[in-house]
Amino acid sequence: MRIGILGLGRIGAFHTETLAGLDAVDSLVVADPFADAARAAAERFGAEVADSPEAVLAAGVDGVVIAAATDAHPGLILAAAEAGVPVFCEKPVARTMTEGVEVLKALAGRDVPVQIGYNRRFDAGFAAARAAVLGGELGPLHTVRSTTLDPAPPPAAYVAASGGIFRDCSVHDFDIIRWVTGREVSEVYAVGGNRGADFIRAAGDADTTGAILTLDDGTIAVVSNSRHNARGYDVRMEIHGFDDSIAVGLEDKLPLRSVEPGTTFPAGPPHDFFMDRFAAAYRFELTAFTEVVAGARTSPCTIEDALEAGWIAEACTLSLHEHRPVTIAEVRRG
Image (tube, rainbow, N blue to C red):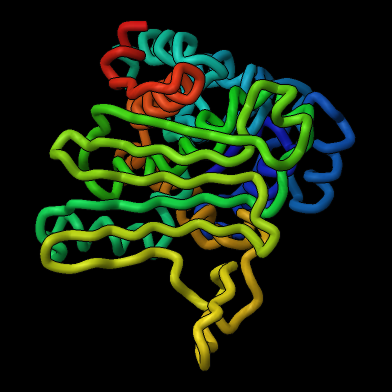
């Protein structure tokens, strides 16, 4: 099949490399506002260059991958849908939830599949955890712990435009908690602090946060995030039920140092970047998109899924600023 790529920054170039290596993909058409980025991708991966998103959509593509700046996501999703081209779009759907809801409304009644990029759904460990939970191996759940710790903060300009750590980082934890447990979040309570980079505080954001999520069946989920984890990129989940407990991410590249005498785990070099930790997941994610394009499966992460994670992020942001519990119903009304 023929796939278009819109946006060739860090993640766009990574997706282009991944797509170029998939057996299902015969040719690529790329576009980026920076012509040099498009030319570099074309030379490296044998892609064709188009001078605009419209030109990509008119180039006979079977599907399109959107890795452009967040502000461009709504317009590009709708343009692809108007052209009848299946869409893969990196999260978020839009910069604000209001815009995201408008995109969903605009797509109502259209038969064009849209997949949003939440790559943890395609990680082998998280997939195994979901299977164990939904298969009843753990019994009823009582506690879930989800962690995302970055090795260092992103650039100041990125932080200022990110919408905050809950919308940018924690949202991956929120999505994967929903997906693994099969439950919805009903209420949150969030806290945060700033003990690192001054530019994060200046942006009105926190560099380290914690959130307690109450799921709709009473399960408690604890989410921990930080921009400062010098040992590496740490993504883990624990799921505790009345019959058993399991964990995702407890492997030799776990960026954690044990001080128990005689313990040699973890023994490998720590994960230091999200593309390292989730390289295989990204490949499976885009393989799934080619199956969506081929009509062999429905979207494995819909706009509705992405908006649900977004509402949790909105509730946590409000909770942090107002120092109180916030229900998801409250932010939906807002």
